[in-house]
Image 1 (cartoon, rainbow, N blue to C red):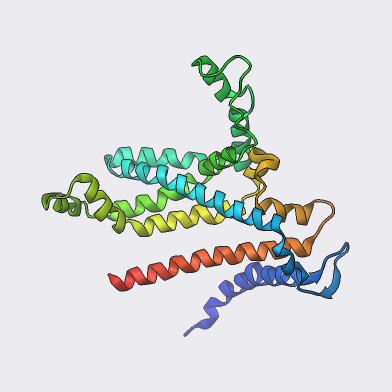
Image 2: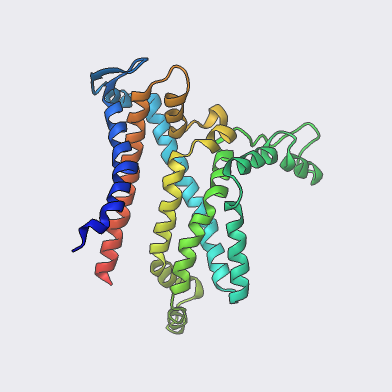
Length: 277
């Protein structure tokens, strides 16, 4: 075996994966201070029991989960709609779902600030429809709801793509067979289509949940102080004053452990599904 052909891949993994992780792990067991004190301690991990950090972790998991659920509720019907069109229409609709990825994510977030702010576009539309008084406002900006809206917009394409791929491979004759056997269309969709496209749903959910868990740009710009997530805390520990790199590294490692657990669950499910059939 020409194992040396794997050399570039291993070099890339060592330089850009193993070394950064090793540095983060090392920093996480150093004593907090400015500058960092080269004394090893596990005190940073003990600080994870802080009720404030626990609440932020739980809020991050909850908002990432809600974002994933919203992307699924919107993305699955959208992918189903696209795959039911003619090939030319499919290409056009698929192209439209890609457009948000062309723009800088920071610019898109600022655009949502314009839409959601007091006296913004949504407020003006609501007043024009008579839903709000002249001095009233929807007050959507700087709320957890605004963060979820922004993250759903960011990550919706990553749910649509794998679901669309699963639907494209689906044998639609199975739905007709189920209906011929007496199943209603809803029952056929629920008992035949959804289980057979479940791998695409799981893949899309991971593609949304993992980046949403560590996102700090959207919560900072759309949520303010009312929606601080773990990504914001990690950013502050590394960049803001006073800096606390050991705690930031510890939080980053714990976040990666949560992500690794989600990936392990996905691959375990994939192996089980492959073994079944």
